[in-house]
Image (cartoon, rainbow, N blue to C red; front, side, top):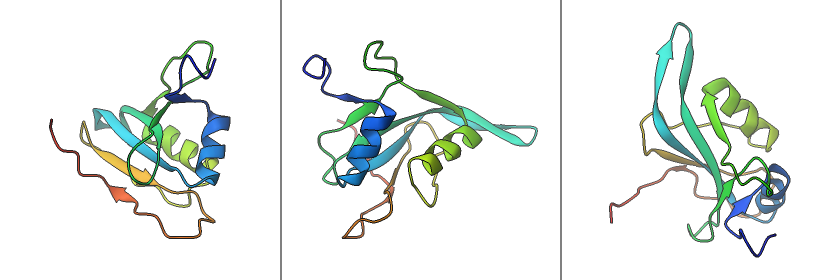
Length: 119
């Protein structure tokens, strides 16, 4: 099925891509808001090559191809930790993007906020 959907990846595939030097990019789809003592919003994750090309959206499974969404910052940070990230930078505004790298890379990656130009 990879030929049918080359631009998606599952959690296991994401771990492999991170080990191969990809970055994990968190994209804010719906701006965050604080309710009581928790933050809510909508974030998605994708694997991107360091040059920004060859991106792959994180999906729940290859057979269903539903994009995995995170609705709380706690859930997102837990996911980042499970992927091997040692820090978490979360975009709070819609359209914001932050890149994370798994530890153990040879060269330090360019992580942090990503400038996105309107086309």
